[in-house]
Amino acid sequence: MFAAIQPRRLYRQVADQIRTLIEDGKFAVGERLPGERELAEELGVSRPTVREALIALEVEGLVHIRMGSGIYVTGQQREKQSLTQSDDLEGPFELLRARSLIECAIAEEAAKVITPAHIDAMDAVLTKMAQTFNSPRTSIALDRTFHTTIAGIIENSALNRFVGELFDQRMSPYFEKLASYFESAASWREAFEEHRAIRDAIASGDAARAKEAMRYHLQQSQSRFSRSFDEDLESEKGRPLRGGQDGKKV
Image 1 (cartoon, rainbow, N blue to C red):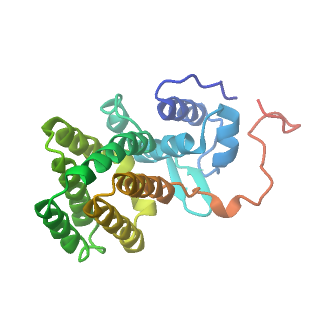
Image 2 (image 1 turned 30 degrees about the horizontal axis):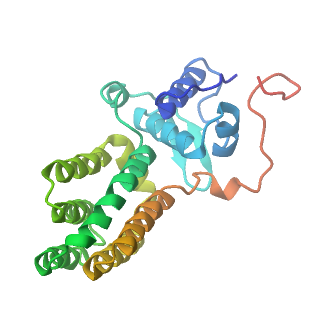
């Protein structure tokens, strides 16, 4: 039923295959799709890639995600502007990995040139952030400011702009939909504590500690988005993909 995936915007290729199966009637309206683990094994990709594909299909209106229950076909496809206008956008997990590579190095360098004025700038953002856990849009804006403030410490305008542009890509329909399932006041409190640890590490002038604090924060950001949509079903026996009467996969 599924073809092997070749490396090239994997989540989009996965979304294309599942969309085609739905449109061809292989999965009926109201039917639950195979779980993330099974889809990942069939397609030869990671579970985060499958998760990104499912989010893309939900943005389109083809599936509905029920946390702890699974992914169900709705068959009510909206216009494809979400995908066609975003063909070249990276998926959320790809963006977070890129940010980790870049911002860990920035935090390391920032610790080497930190000044009291830089510390004051970070503290000003954190003070505001501590009051916005229940306001996601404000928290996101301050999150961006915190990371660009750190990039600004090393006084490289190109890097500062690049960090801001990478962060802004999380404003895509995919990332917003993903965040709607996994972000909460509790998750923002966790992120705040990680930001504070980054601040303390940079302020101490310890470059290695600063790099590790940033790495941990962005790793945790990925982890917060990595809970399976059908996590409560993980103990169930994997049901076969739809096929012949003998239940074999096709």
